[in-house]
Structure formats: C-alpha cells, structure tokens
Length: 500
Image (cartoon, rainbow, N blue to C red; front, side, top):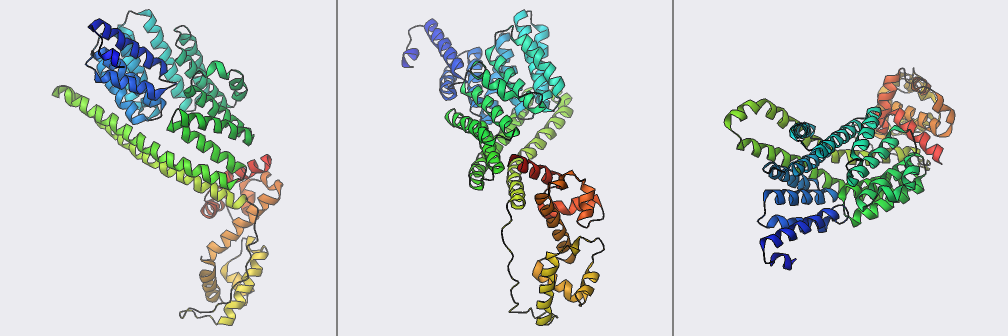
C-alpha cells in the first residue's frame, strides 16, 4: 500500500482511498480480517468525516462477520456519529441500518427503536426515491426479524415477503441473502416445510460467502437434527464448524459445537458429547464476556453523548436515561446468566443420560457395619437385620402404596420408628420421605423405559401408579430427584426410543 501513500497529488490520493474502500467493502463478508486491516489503515489517515464514517462502518462489519460484537458496535456507533456530521444521506442510512442490526443482536431493543425512529425521520426528509425504497425495505426486514425473534411466525412471514419485494428492486444482494436465510430459519421454526430440501437445492445461489454458507449449513443441521437424522446433522454442523474456524467467527463456531454435542448426545456417544460440549463451554464464556462488554460500550457511548448536549436537554432526558440505564443493567445481568445457562444445559443432558442409559449392575451387598457410631442407640445385630429388610423392600413395590409411612414400615419390620429412621438416615443418606420418594420415582422411570404403554398415560396416572396422592407433588418430587420435569423427561426418552 506504500504507493498509495506516496501518490503525487491529492486527487490521486482520493482515488486511491476510494479504491481501497471499494476493495475492503467487497471482501468484508469473505475475508473480514483483510477488510478490517484496510479499513484500519484508512481510519489512520487524515480524511473527511464521510471517508472516516465509511471506513469505520467497514471495520464494524468486519468484526461483526468475525462474531466480535464489542468492537463491532463500538465502530458502528462511531461511524454513525461521523455520518451525522456529513450531508450524505446514503452513509447516514447505511450506518443507522447496521447499528440497528447489532443492537437487535445484543437485545438492546430500546436503543434500536430510537435509531429506527431516526431512520424513519431520514425517510421523511429525503427526496431521493431510491433511498426511500431502501429505507422501506430495511424497515420491513427489521420488523420481520423482530417478529421472528418473538415467535410471531405468521406476521414475520408476511413482513419478510414485503421486505423481499422491496429489496429486490434495490439490487442489494447482501440484504436479499439475509432475507432468504431468515425465510429458511422461519420454515424450520414454524415447521411448515422442510428447509433443508430448499437450502440444499439453492445452496450455491443463496450463499455467496462463507459467512452466509455457515448460516445455511446451521439451518440444514438443525433440520436434520429435528428429523432425527443425526449423522446428517453432524455432517452439516461439522462443515459449518470448519467454515467458522476458517472465517473465523466465534458465534457460529459455538452454534456448530452446540449442534454437534446435542447430535452426539442423541446418538448416546458420550465421549464425543463431552468433547464438543467442553469446547462449546469455553467458547460460550468468550461470547458472554464479549456481549457484556458490548452492552457496556453502548451504555458508555450514550452517557458520553448525553454529556455533550446542553444541560436543558439533559434535564428533559432524565426519565428516558433512567429507563434505558435500568434496561442496560438488566441486560448485563442477563448476559452474565447466559454462561450459567450453558453449564446448566450440560448438567441437564447428563441427568437425562444417567436415567436413559442401560442400567448397569450396581447392586452391592450391604457392607457390615464395622464401626458403629457411638451416638447410635441401635444394636449392631438389629441394624444389620434392618438393612437386609430394606434391601428386600426395595426389590418389591410396597413403597408405591400411598398409605406407606414410617410407622407402617416399622411395624412390618418388627421394629420401632426411631431405629428405622436412624438406619435410613445413616445408610441411605436421606430421611424416610426422601428415601420413599426416590424409590417411587426410580420405579416409574423404569416403567417408562421398559413399557411403551406408559407414554400414553397422563401425569396424574403416573403419579398415582407410583404412590403419589397428587399430580403436583409427583411433579415437584420428580424434578427434585432427576433435575427435570416429568414431561420433559418423557419427551426426551420417547425421542430416544423413536430414533433407536
């Protein structure tokens, strides 16, 4: 790039800078790191606000494509401020649209809506019909993505069609591909059609860059997973993972790793599950940190901006600042909890696997108590006798009787409740109620695993079958024992049986 810097005239320098901008812009979605380097060079030069805004926007996009949202939003907001200083409506439009996209990703809806209103204001003031068409298309696209995110699929479908119709007239290929990808995502979520068939057929025409190919492959992988074609799902996720590492993009890398871990879990390949889940947990920690930093960046940017406006405007803005500040702090807390969510997921998968995996022989003879606790009031011979009777009790199903109580069981064992309670506490690690409840839950789980007819019964029947007096108490105890609700457990178990 030395020959650009040493160009003889200012006019030649401008031509060189514009060429660099075009080159960087063209390679943003295919070679983001290269585009970012070019944009950084342009930013370092003493150029106009318009050139700086364009370079900052390219820099923001290059980090977005790499999945680094904190640096992306920082440059996007700076590009917007620079664009506002110019009279160029096109760069104002581009910086606003991209800032809105990032803010939506970060769930900063309040700020995104503020910028959307600025976009609407720009539309009202411009006399450029082509720009008006672009704004309308982007507003419809943004509306569709918000509806899709909130699960309003019918409305999202309508908005996507309207956006596609408008954007097709602007010849914006990137926006068109974004809408096509959103359509496939909608098909998958609404389960109206098989997006993998469309995506495979039109793969080359839809995905012109690795960034877009990864998204299509992720949708295909998720569809195959939904259809229980786990090997094909793994193939899709592996292809997406390879592209995400090559691009690189940590957000898509994590999605691919998560898809692979779930697919291997479904195939009961625990080694592969742990391998990919461990990698996913590491990457997700980076993502959570980055998103938290990005939220702070937006918060600090707003504070800095408000400090630059007049005192009277600040007074008028106090209410909105408090609301926005509170929302941002809440979002930070939500972001921090995402990491916990990833960890909880892994624990939940392990919990399910523990119960659905083939039962191994773990029946060990009760060890003879060598050292009796000095505080124990039970004779050693009585203690051994009670342990043997408890073992026989566990092999039967008397514990499924609703009337079973410690008093009833003690009478059946020819002992007193004090002795029986102490033996259960010391040898089973829980009180009588906990002991009985765990036996009942394990009993009904075994029934679900071995007799498919139990999937046809209501939860209330299952509760009664294993000895609970109500649906609610069964659900509460089931979750306390297994870590998940009975409905969720049954869905997963049935899913495993169907895919076997």
